[in-house]
Amino acid sequence: MTYLDTINAILGTCGYVPLASLEEEHPFKDAAVSLFDTTLSTELSRGWYFNRKYDTLHPNAQGEIYVSHDVLDFSPLTPGFYKAGNRICKIGDFLTPVSSSIYGRLVYAIPFEDCPTLFQNFVTALTKHSFQTVYDGDSTKTRQLAALLEVAWASFHTSEIRGTGANILDSNVRLQGVRNAFRNTYSRIGTRK
Image 1 (tube, one colour):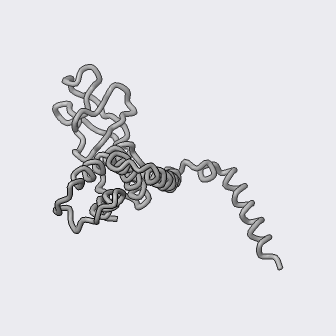
Image 2: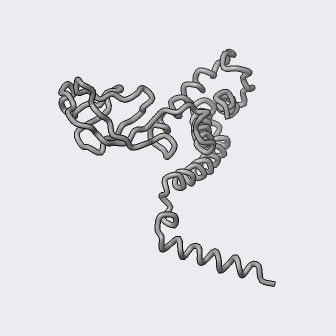
Image 3: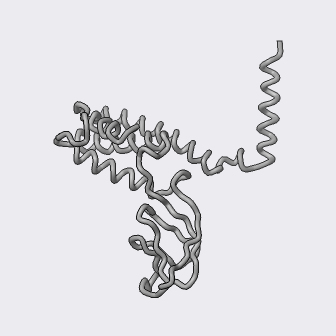
């Protein structure tokens, strides 16, 4: 799904003809682009399996720790620090140099086209629902888009669970054994003649 496809889908919720390019003039194009960009940034900043990693950050010679501009969020596991702009600061005294390395979770901005398809579908559905609610307000369309949003969220959330290994059946050895035994038993039953 391309950025233009998504903007056209958002505009389409209000019955507008698709744009041939993002340079084309349209009275609601800027609103759709702005809402989509905000929604994408907000959802990416939550930190999903595909755009977060844990890493140790080290201070430079001046006792400063900087992160790249594509880092949306940094959650230190070392208490007492926060991200301000692209710099890691001490709570209560952001001018004091950082003397030690800090371990934490980094959340990265990723271009929409590089995000997993299920995430793209979710963000598109969320933006379509928001756009339609604000700029059209048709209650029937709103309900339909809300139902599609629920499906998109469930599908993406399933991939998040798989991506993080949060499914208890996948992370517990005993439950894996029970699941495999169950599958083996019922696969044999289905093949009897």
